[in-house]
Image 1 (tube, helix red, strand yellow):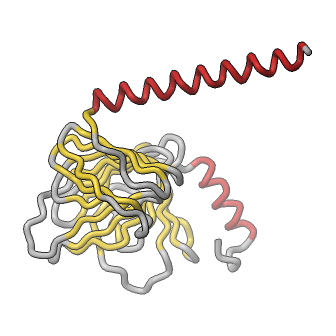
Image 2 (tube, rainbow, N blue to C red):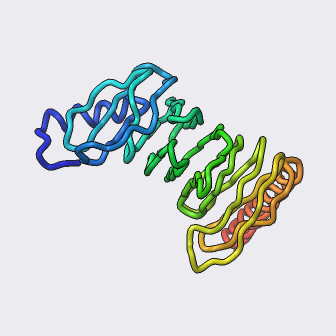
Length: 231
């Protein structure tokens, strides 16, 4: 936070961070192009924060500009309509930045630092068009589709409800790209190529198996500790 903030302002920001649900951080830029607008915000007690600028309330129809960072806390959700008609739905405890969005050239780049993002993206039709979503572990190329992304620093899960996306590692040294079609999902762990895509049912089965394996491993650890204490 900028050191020019007074002590009362720092206290206000701390209060808003604890109680507010959605915050918008905008890098200090004179005239960033407009990317879209907020069309839904849950709940209403949200704030907009611009670096080095006094926090302001955020409300439906407020503009979103290139460089804006949207952060939601425990109960917050946001729906952003991009110029051109695509939608981005930001889930709770998430952080998303609109790096760029140009509807004329259909060149867009969004970054999901962590949390959940659901996109409803209109089909790209112009030569050289690109809609790219970055996460800490992956790069996702969208043509025109409905998808969900869950991201942490260590892993990214991508699910496609309609259409298709192409997924690769965020690390350019890691080779391999995975196409994810309608009804499929994949996972990208840090420093690794994306896993082979699988259906939702297959992914759910694999997740249950992994959870059961972890549970059994934890049980074995607990038994081992008890034996050591007994000795």
